[in-house]
Length: 452
Image (cartoon, rainbow, N blue to C red; front, side, top):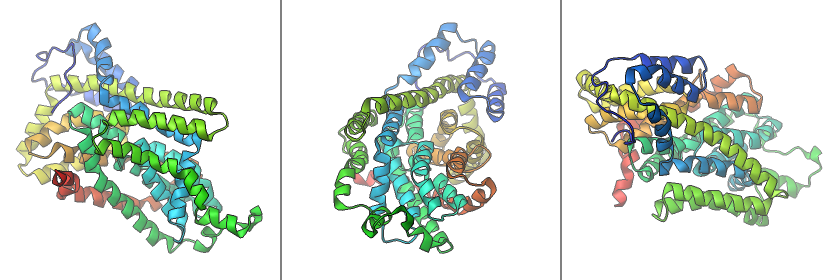
């Protein structure tokens, strides 16, 4: 375990240093809203006099880190999500979910939950799932008299399924930097993700009893639709439409099946998924070249931002290793308690707080290498710990003040913030209960071992 070995480091520079200034400065810059990559770069430049890093090292190390094979999967999965939205595959996922759940009352809520789970099984991004599902279903839910604040809260919460259900970009980051099998991390996160999905559905079932289901289950007749067309929109799609939308359902099967079947690595599966999504784009849209270029542009912008964070965070992580922060944390926690469960509870509290203030990928890259050695000292399975770490940080996406999922869902669904936060409480409780279950019952994340 540990930070990947890269060229240019002199590991004997600052042994035993107690300097906390670098991390404090980094956290302060992030809290005042400085762009994440710039904040870490500035900390590295200011701290270089202390670390005494060679100039060529600062140029080579970011590149050495981001060309690691597992990290290539990140921009590829982002590209898949962009192409899905532009080719109509996202809408197909919604229609397939609607067809499956058409007999339920307040069905669009269940559709949103299931479609977010399917979206998460393709893109691995929480915010992307919120944006795609909110943009597709948000207006429809408001038209059918769903309270905007409840629709936004459900949208924000189900966006977490984009990470809890594999593949997951933060888990790829954790596995890469801490050197843990990404395939095992994906398998380990599957049951917690499904538990969250079921929990969200139970909350919606309870909440729907107080919603105007008569309005929500009926499509307005003023649009001039016949009864068969209304049933197609509200209750699902016809058989020929299902056949047209099957490629959308085949994509998560292609991604996850190839990974768990041992046919492809996560990076290779992401590449195949990107080619598949590109092919579908050419088959389904009138201007495939234009849509493909727009999708590539969007993926490049988002992917470059994430990889910039990774590059500079990895340098800061390595500097903290040189200052022996992981060793100090491990020694301090062991001195505090010798009980692994108490340690995990302390870590949960710390990570929940970090997730409230830091961007997900940056927090994963920063806290993973710092805390993983301490978890190893307690004999905690690194796969279980990776899932715990990512779940804690992801819950921060629905916990102010940062809470990116909340703000994206609020904007898309035109909701008022304070009533929306009240509607989010039951969903926060669900994710917290699943987190506690994962903490105290490790078979939820190590079940895949029984398959061997």
